[in-house]
Amino acid sequence: MLVWIASFPRSGNTLFRMALTRLYGVKSYSVHGDADLERLGIAEAVGHQGLPEGGIERLRDSDGVHFVKTHDLRPPDESPAIYIVRDGRDALVSYAHYQCDVEQQGEGFEQRLAKLILGDSPRGRWGDHVLAWRDRPSSTAIVTYEDLVADPFPRVRGALSELGIILPEEDAPANLPSFAQLQADSPAFFRKGSPGQWREEMTPVMEHHFWRWNAAGMSRAGYPVRERPSTGKPGPPWYDMESLYTWLLKETQGALEQKQDQLTRRSAEIQAARDSLSWTLTAPLRWLKDKLLRRGRAPKDSNDRPHTHSGPQSG
Image (cartoon, rainbow, N blue to C red; front, side, top):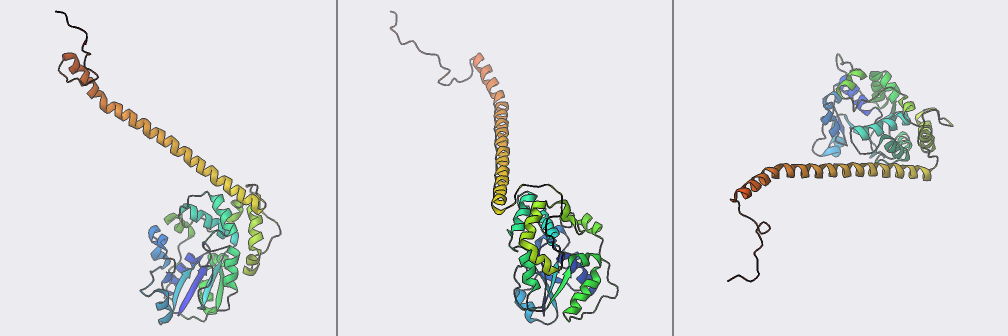
């Protein structure tokens, strides 16, 4: 039996898997490979393991319960699922930081966040992701990130119970590490875990566009829908799609020009260093040549030979 652990990125999927492996001693898989977990050294703590030969099909056809993480926009089949949902504003802010800091996509944070709000992601818009999984006809247990953070083990038990999954619990489940411990071990991955952090980083105009595209998803997920932005953080002056793209283009062009200036300066520095090195290396040779010439012992090249008088010779 295959069970999806689904979510939009940065919505608590990793925390759910950590609680799952401590509570029941089971490991979970991922359709995305999760190389970042291995690289950051937290794969074991998460309970992550690589897919077996034969992949998803083998898990689907085998005995037992197999949990598989996915961030895909559309549910791939009718297998039961646990869908973890987080306030879309927090999820998008966290995802933008993750793409900048961990995936190193080479854009500024505000540029990346603006694009994610518009749905510039393989996962689509946050609201579309929520609706696709929340309204699927197959069995789906919903867990909110905020409840999961507050009390993880009961939320994991409740999700499995809702799907009719019964697993033996560990005799003495190990407590989850505190967020401070997780952050100390991997600050890039565990950046900020408390709800509501979007207020410090999402501008009113960004929030305005967030609601424009994600109000239905927020309502379906059970979050209160606001009629107007609620934050006071100043930001870029874009209020419609045309000016938003204009701002993004301007920001991108400015970043490219800045990078070109840096490359030009670096090229000049390299050329100056090469000239200095060339002078330094050839100076002893020039000194030796001049010294030998003065002693009359050095072979002279064509430029150093005296001109021969070609006029008539006296008898």
